[in-house]
Length: 154
Image (tube, rainbow, N blue to C red; front, side, top):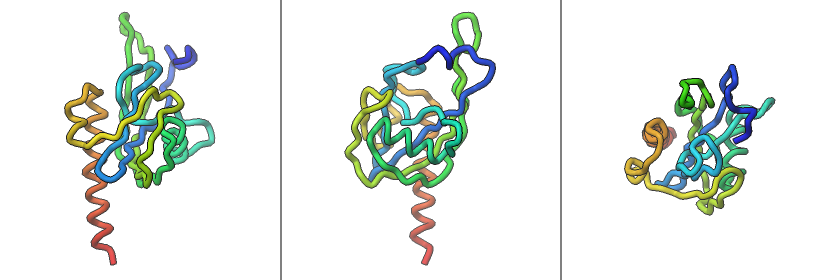
């Protein structure tokens, strides 16, 4: 993690992507702080001039080598990390989106040291941030609702 993202007077906008392939969700193991070594959704900081959906597609390509179709918004979450003195070291406002990947051959890249496809039931047993688990569950329900709605449309 670069020093320019620490101890700021404003949050960064991050984009998290809940990527589905068949009945599995894509997770990445972070190579950099915050959450270095931990599993999370692919994603990262939105760049100036880039839409949230463009950032989502770019981040998944960089971290997993996958092209995705972004389907919509899942949720917005704040990730705030304080140091031992209670000062805010990192603050990210995370816009989480739902996406599908036609291909399942993910390869770690960017700031991801590993990638894995997990069945949604297996995510609950992982040692990951509770908000990530909640967002994945919400995305799973939204995906099912959207699929059911599409099946009903003539």
